[in-house]
Length: 91
Image (cartoon, rainbow, N blue to C red; front, side):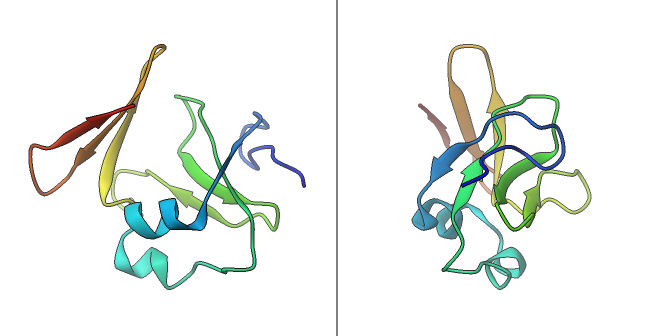
């Protein structure tokens, strides 16, 4: 599998389909292909969050964000903040 981000070429991290189903907005969920393998782009300067080998991407672009949460990457951890509440998950 080619696990490099189609926008910036950085190596992606494999993510289970359930992760996408949990974090993407309804409109983006309709675009998921269960047979695809998805990866997470960890680059802080890339708008792509999830991508597939088939070049499908889900982004965090401000106006058209396809995520239910805000993803905040730091050098030490990953923070997910629910857009509709003040809940934050830090991994």
